[in-house]
Image (cartoon, rainbow, N blue to C red; front, side, top):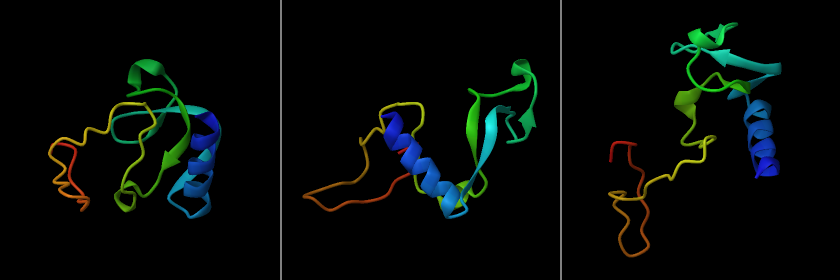
Length: 84
């Protein structure tokens, strides 16, 4: 799995959707880098999405992507929001 993530994130950096920090950093709820864990939301990451609105989906935390209510019928695929 780590190899998959490394390849995905290196591609995101290559195409300009993300930047890679030299060391993992914490981010606050507004996406700003913070030095203290109590100010952070989530885990430290070396990667920072700088254009999240250009990205369809990345699941770094391993949760199920919940295909319930995705509208898929008979092999036809649809995009849906996280709230269904």
